[in-house]
Image 1 (cartoon, one colour):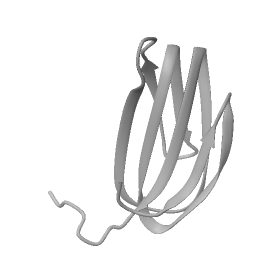
Image 2 (image 1 turned 90 degrees about the horizontal axis):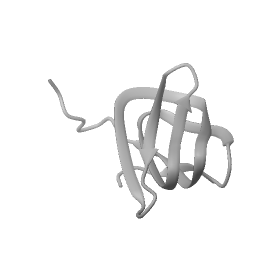
Image 3 (image 1 turned 180 degrees about the vertical axis):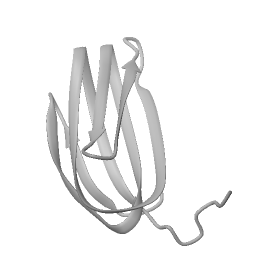
Image 4 (image 1 turned 45 degrees about the horizontal axis):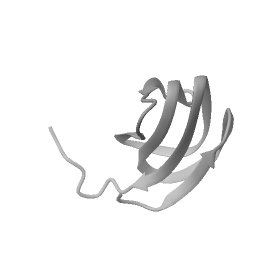
Length: 97
């Protein structure tokens, strides 16, 4: 994964802060179990991700817009375990078009 890790969280519902220093963000989520994980970048975006009971499911979202400091919240539905990593995504050399 490109960038520098600025926050890692896990366990049950959780949240925390990050500082992307005006770079983009890569949000990587792994989950397993019956249910889903919802990731909220407060004031920016939110998405719900289904998890699989029999194997880990991985998602990655790259956001090529500049972010400063922010807050992330993670909530779960059902019986899932999850891990989340937020990394800075350098905007220099970002795809265009």
